[in-house]
Length: 172
Image (tube, rainbow, N blue to C red; front, side):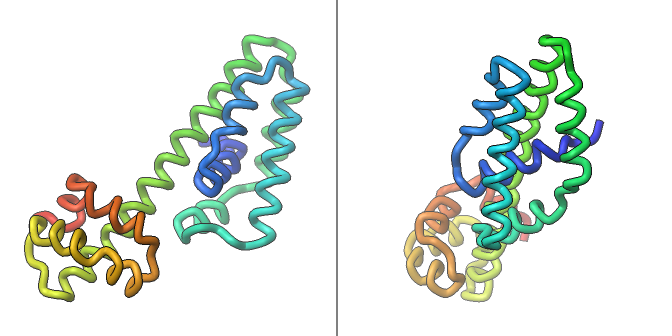
C-alpha cells in the first residue's frame, strides 16, 4: 500500500517543528469534521513553511518536494466520504502512524547524512578508527560545527551515537 500523502505533509511538520500536535489532533479527532479541520490546519502550516522556503535541512526539503498534492486532495475527498466511525478511526490512525514513521525516518536520514559528513571531515584530518573518531569529535565539537556549518548540539549528539559512528566509519 502506498504511503498517504497527507502523512507526508504531517511528517514534514513534525520534522520541522518538533511537535506532534497534528498527529495528536488527527488521531484523536472525535468527528470527521474535526479531523478534516486538523488536516486543513496542517496543510495551512505546511504551505506557510513551504512558501518561506526555510526547511531546516535538505533531507526534509527533498522529501517535501516529493509530496503529490493532487493525491492529497483525493485523500481528503476520500476521508470526507467515510461514513463509518470505525473506518474513520482506522484511516486517521494509519495517517498518524505513517506520519510518525516517516518523521523518524527523516530524522534518521538527516543524522546519517551529518555523521557521514563528520566522518569524511575526520578522515581528512587523519582520523583512522572509530575510537579515534569519537575522541576527535569530543575534542573538536566547536571546530567541526564551524567548519561544516553545523549546530554544536547536533555535532555533540552525533559524537555520542556510537552505533551511527560505527555504521558510517566502520570497516575502513
